[in-house]
Length: 238
Image 1 (tube, rainbow, N blue to C red):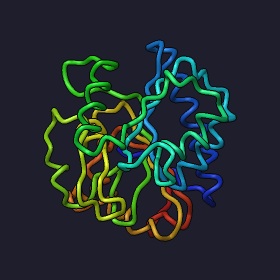
Image 2 (image 1 turned 60 degrees about the horizontal axis):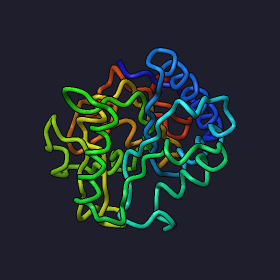
Image 3 (image 1 turned 135 degrees about the vertical axis):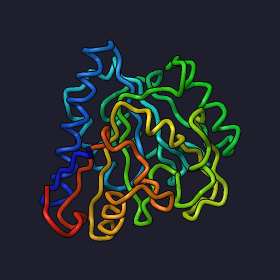
């Protein structure tokens, strides 16, 4: 069952999320000697990453990945990597060799193919690569990573790892995203939602699975949702 945490405001969501990520990474390192964490873009994750940079994380034992990326260069203001670099990678002095950047400048399909290969080589499994924790935001339309409502990428199959996106409903139109199979295979997903503009998406996510609400297709027994009062659905609060 999905674990829901409601906080009074966005800052508290970021604080709780940074603490949650720290605990989860510590547990993964204790159990397997390394932790694999995937980051997302967006304003709510950004504040979480700023706070996470000050947490006592053993970054030398963490491999950092990305849930999605825009097909732009790493110094472009639209780059998820650039946001992560400014908010987390540089303040926490994380070694470059620990950071696995999606090469958006290669375009959606070549970039996706290279990232899928890198994931497969680093996380050798019989099936899709298994990340320890994926941090996700949610769009007002219910999208996660760059998996959009009704998109063909949702039908990629259980062996898909990383996908190229063309014609995204949000600019820029070309993107790279982890597949739904990889999101569902992760040991845990942490979804962050703040602001009244996300309330309908959160309600739809918690309803029956629906390919027009990609967040509703996540594996619920491995999903933790942290939201502020404004984003929380109507009715009893967790």
